[in-house]
Length: 112
Image (cartoon, rainbow, N blue to C red; front, side, top):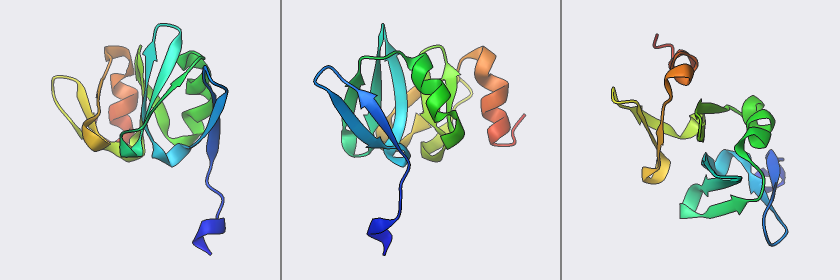
């Protein structure tokens, strides 16, 4: 049945211990000094005690990519993109697109 199907997860160290997050429910990750904030479906936010770089490598194979010095976004949650360089994601989340990440991001949508 559906419930038994394996969903890829990531274990996130938090101040209290750890949380297991379903990767497809991660909308975006935002760096906050040495921590990483995970913005999840259902307006849930999880704060990790590790930095963004550690998650960038772990999540790359799951279509969650670096788009800015401070942001990773889940390509499955991207809804639109503005010419001003703002990525609009599920549940009104927004991320900035950095110039050095622009081609890689737009290339994922076949827009050069």
